[in-house]
Amino acid sequence: MKKTITLDAIDPIEIYGVGNKILTEFCSYFPHLKVVARGNELILEGRESDIAEFNIRFAELIERRHRKMNLTVYDVEDIFSGTGEQSHPTADAVIVHGTDGKPIRARNKTQQDLIAAYFENDLVFAIGPAGTGKTYMAIALAVRALKNREIKRIILTRPAVEAGERLGFLPGDLKDKLDPYLQPLYDALADMIPSRRLHEFMEDGTIQIAPLAYMRGRTLDKACVILDEAQNTNLGQLKMFLTRMGVNAKFIVTGDATQIDLPHKEDSGLLAGIKLLEGIKGIATVRFTNQDIVRHPLVTKIVKAFDEKQ
Image (tube, helix red, strand yellow):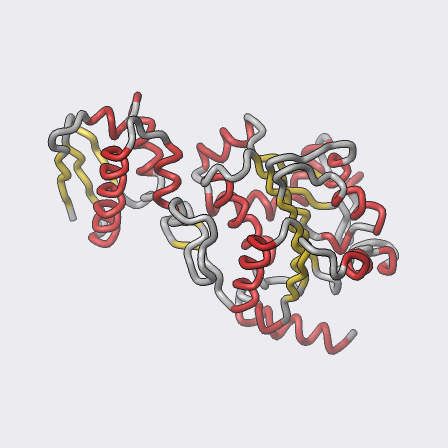
């Protein structure tokens, strides 16, 4: 299907941006749609549903231009985040839109509890089995906060603990050795931020991904900081991480106490740390169960089978 959108009574550069920067950002949310700009006309070619969605969002962009002096790429991000006009989304609201245009929102009651806990507390522990979307939802909340300019940076970290492998035997330099441990974080970000923008954010330090040891000595202000796989930290490491919290920071700690990769499982400090901090105002714990698994249906059965054996 083809459609032409004509810009009337407005200079195209005010919508497209210098060098078509704003238009390029806008079109990145429609990867399956061909868009050609010719003067004051936009020629669209693709699926009818994509064209209809483009038309709706583009009308929002034009309306936003009428309400402010200049548009920026952040206006595009606000439009697609679905949360630009409200500080706290409702439990079933869209957190962000994925790079494929699909909305990312809570898929069950416990994920909704995580969203509510995030807005009501500065430190949230999200614990439970694999496949429940703990880390994914945490990153979605961080991306939303960045797009709404509630924070200045996102910092993602996890302990570089081998799951039956040896770092020293892996090829490459330190970054090459650590990247496989951080790949799940890259994957989640890539679902929510267009690749070009994600690269820019990582180049300028707006988004940082690093092993836990790199957090020592830092003070993390105006940031959303996520510690993933926290079951592989000892109590001292957990304390070190939590005491990095600076002004206007949000911390989310995720982990699964049934998947400890430390040589001695009793060294894990996650559950002990949660118990120590229980009852402190501003700290919340959200507990996921096997019923909250949102991956392949077999994952629920796999987790249950392993739990019954232990």
